[in-house]
Image (cartoon, rainbow, N blue to C red; front, side, top):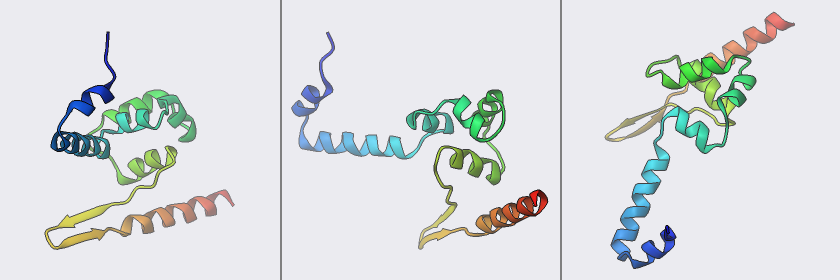
Length: 115
């Protein structure tokens, strides 16, 4: 019979508990798109409907190792998120903003073509 994790955790030293918690946080902060979608309790079909595409296309997208930023942004937004591109350097971080400008241009073009 399986024992509750809490029982095992209570027997761990405070250092081991802290190390376990840090590892869990790191694992949750870094995950592939497919795991992120599952963690948000969404199906490929849900994402496909929001993006007006087929489920098979979402499956292929989740397997890619290289894709357009606009494609990744659409996928993240379909899950209710927001994509932020950050460059990390030894002396600090920089949020890259030019992709937001591209999105604004795309939105205004699509508004003009539908109007």
